[in-house]
Image (cartoon, rainbow, N blue to C red; front, side):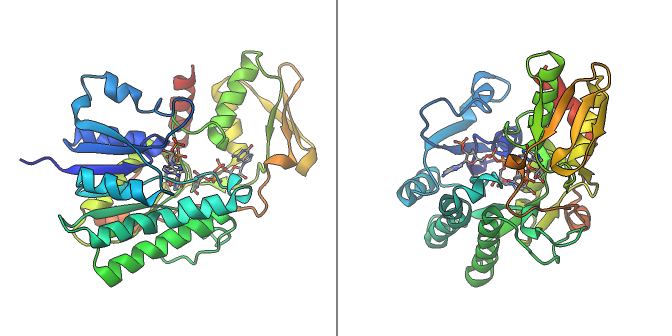
Length: 340
Ligand code: NAP
Ligand code: G4F
């Protein structure tokens, strides 16, 4: 049987690397787009090329950038994909306040550029997956589902909403098989170091090894619905295989505060934190050593906070039989194990 061809924008990121592994296992030919960078940016996928088990002959990388339509055009024509997964983005919410125009250009307009090429593509019908985000719900009350109103609190979220509606528009107006996966936070050993889960795990490990004294964090009260990236990429594939293109919310349905994530990680590392003070003056003291190991810093607060995210994923459970399996404690232990 002829192998399906997938093209992944964002293959060098957390999700892109797991999706590439999944699709290779499913016997796809996988093409991925990497950006030019002055230092290596393929460390999350290098093992795929090194491993015979992963059939490295079925994966190819191309230089490109979502801001450069000439590169998008030539990669799509060269690779002739059956499915395109757009996971590429300036994906950091806090940083989107510092580089708003860049974020809108990549995270917002990037999807439009790809969809325009798909619209005029003559060789075959290409299916399109867009990495939409629970951040789009912003200040809307949990649980959030496909029918919840978007109330964005960042330029990142506003850019993702632009992409979300562009996908719907191209689906309705041009009958393109295009879908949004509205994914809630998902983490893994491959998570970027400046997202809170990875920062907590790295920070507490370094404190335990006496390589760091204090871990500075922002809002400890915000709650998130955290799942495991490895199983969330399975939902992306399932969403594109469904005969009718639809949008789906993907999450665990359980939420924890940043402080709870911090305490759970500390517990697994044998650290007990005693909290003192409130708000910006809150500190965390190591019960054994009596030393301050956690401090709250204004620097890590958002311009506008998203307080509570918790998914209602009944639709994807019902229609695509996808459900999460990894508990938050297992997610943390997986991240710790890998760091060690
Ligand atoms: P990530 O680790 O930050 O990966 C982002 C990817 O996009 C990287 O491969 C990055 O390349 C690439 N990229 C950035 N700017 C680009 C540009 N101008 N042109 C081409 N590629 C570019 O993000 P992730 O956690 O895997 O998330 C994947 C997608 O899902 C993102 O769109 C994110 O916004 C969205 N999302 C994530 C979550 C989550 O919790 N992880 C939840 C909902 C939605 P470099 O490696 O060169 O930087
Ligand atoms: O880990 P975070 O930076 O993730 P955030 O902002 O929820 O965004 C992630 O999930 C979105 C899905 O909802 C994705 F679309 C997006 O691409 C990204 O993957 O922050 C989580 C929470 C926030 O409330 C933040 O204010 O942790 C809080 N936080 C507290 N201290 C911190 C810190 N966040 C970071 N990054 N660093 C801190 O020191």
